[in-house]
Image (cartoon, rainbow, N blue to C red; front, side, top):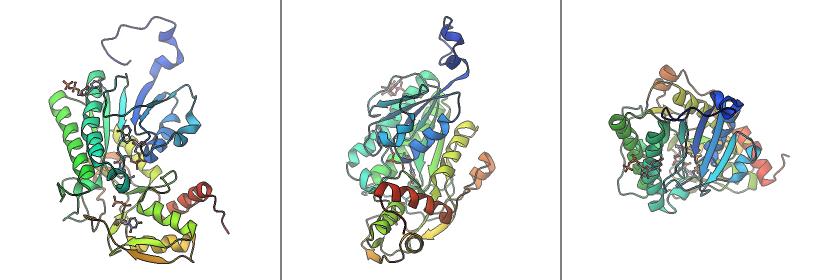
Length: 335
Ligand code: NAD
Ligand code: UDP
Ligand code: UDP
């Protein structure tokens, strides 16, 4: 039931198929890259009703078209910086642009989404007694002085830089989650997600894996931002979604790192993409953006122990799946 205070529903509603053991799940940002894969996975479970709330800033209805009209699915255009009244059992709170070019485009809006948006979702969770999961980010570690990063590291973050709307925004969002937990007894879950890639990423969203694959398919040079020795760890989206669901269903609040510990320099990634997609393209060194973290690799000991989770896809397994999706969307056939 949605709320313990509600009187029982009259039959026949009460005995309808949907009333019995359904779980009503809200996904904010569900029209985005990770969100839409999460929708797919949750919709496979018959007892779930899924409601997506999205303002389509970086997401698209296209990502959800297979569920349009499904009786257990609803899509609502809504901006989470405004209050939302709805009755749900669980909230996966993902809404927030994730790619640097999008979150820097309107930084004030990004911080509003992180702070006011998260506050609204917590107010909602409190009113209806729902469990809420926040998708935080490895960016909370900033340009880390510890390597690899585990959850007890507090981070090295510039509070006034061009990335601050995102990384400081997520840090406040985490604080709000834990304050609602301590002050109001809310059931919270916090995931710190490391770079994730896969089908349905925005083709021109500026992140490194999508950039390199799109560039290779278009026959353009792969733009490695200097020095190219900076590292990232890339997690395939289906592994990530599996981790998010385990975290939601488990009993630990987090924060828990979710990511793939395989670490690559950006130059190594460029070389892998070149070899796989188009050996004819050149690799070009270009200028970097400010505050770019020099290294990043998750310590996933906690996720292994508490969630019995670890990624299954290595970079060499995931890149071809993403290549296939980008070929279809860009209309570039394999020679
Ligand atoms: P995405 O940009 O594809 O998805 C974000 C979604 O949120 C979009 O559909 C967008 O339209 C929606 N949105 C943005 N602002 C909104 C608002 N004010 N109201 C309603 N909807 C809004 O990004 P993604 O990669 O799917 O990321 C999803 C979440 O995971 C984000 O919270 C992001 O910070 C987090 N995350 C992602 C990564 C990654 O590598 N992809 C890494 C760390 C954390
Ligand atoms: N809120 C919401 N939906 C709800 C309940 C609350 O969007 O169902 C918003 C509400 O507008 C407020 C925020 O969540 O801005 C925090 O709510 P809370 O009740 O925790 O605090 P208060 O309203 O007392 O500031
Ligand atoms: N990067 C790059 N070329 C690009 C896009 C990104 O070399 O076309 C680099 C960027 O400098 C950073 C890394 O790839 O060191 C990851 O960047 P991305 O924007 O994908 O994610 P984030 O910085 O949030 O980890």
